[in-house]
Length: 101
Image (cartoon, rainbow, N blue to C red; front, side, top):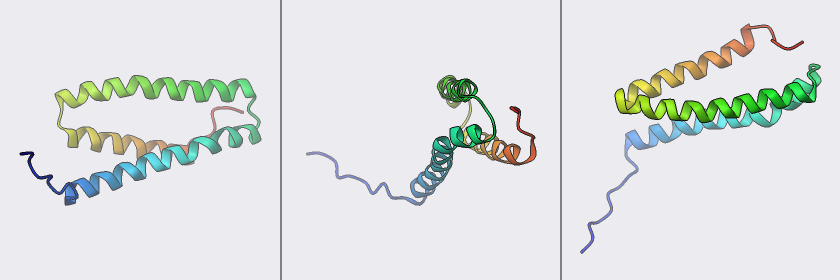
């Protein structure tokens, strides 16, 4: 006889889901607007394509790196480091001058 399903809607699961949903939502909300913003700020189509391509390639590479880090460090420390870096990139967008004219 199969085991009864446990309730997965625990406090930790819900908080983890909300944190991930917030981070992913913020990231993918900006992606469609980024080429439009860069085009209006004077970037060429080639520069925009390079930027979006570098972003996607780096996302693939960092998924492997994070996977290896999860084997070595606790999930909490990896997630907190990622959240801190994620927040710093958003503040950098505000504080740092654009790198493309």
